[in-house]
Length: 206
Image 1 (spheres, rainbow, N blue to C red):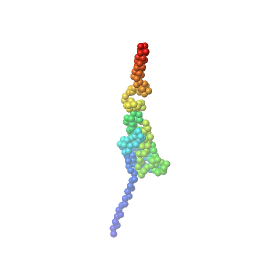
Image 2 (cartoon, helix red, strand yellow):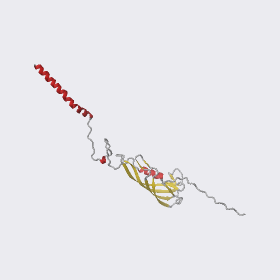
Image 3 (cartoon, rainbow, N blue to C red):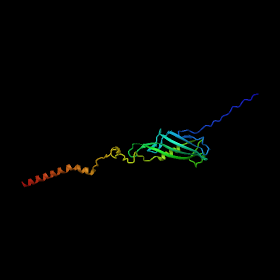
Image 4 (tube, one colour):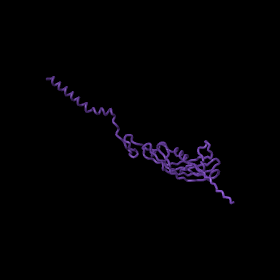
C-alpha cells in the first residue's frame, strides 16, 4: 500500500491591530538592541484635534520624521513633527494659521506594565496618542493674528487694524443732554412774566 502524503497544515495569525496613518511597523527591530531605523510619515489627519480656539483640522497634514532605536526593553522613538494649526484670533476673530514644530521622544515598551505609557503591539507602534498629546500641549490658548492686534471697536465692531485712526464722537452725558433740551423753555416764560409786570405798572400809573 502506498502511503497518502499528509497535507501540510498552515496556521494564520489574525492581527487585531487597526492600522491608521500613525501606525508604524517595527518587526525588523523587535528584540534587536542596537538596530536603528528612520522613516518619514506624511499624515492626512483623519480626525481633527486641538483646543477650543485652535486645532489641527480634519484633513490637515502633518509631517513626521521618525527615528526608532531598538533597546532591551522596547523601541525608543524620537520624532520631529511639523504642520499647521488653524483657529481664530481671540481679539479680532479673523482666521489665523500658526506653524507647528514639536519634538517627541518616548519609549514603546515590550512589557504591558502600567509603568509604561506606550507599548509595542504585535509588531507595530501607534504614534497617534504621542503626536496628539505633544501637538495639543504646544498650541496657544489665546492665539492672536499678530502681537499688536487691537481687536474690534467696542461700539461698531470694525477691526481696528484695518481702520487706523478709527474713532467715534464722545457720547454726551445724558444729564447734560436733558439740560440742553430745557434751554428753549427757560426764556419764554421769563419774557411773559416781564411783559405782565410792565403792563401792571402802566395801569397803576393811570
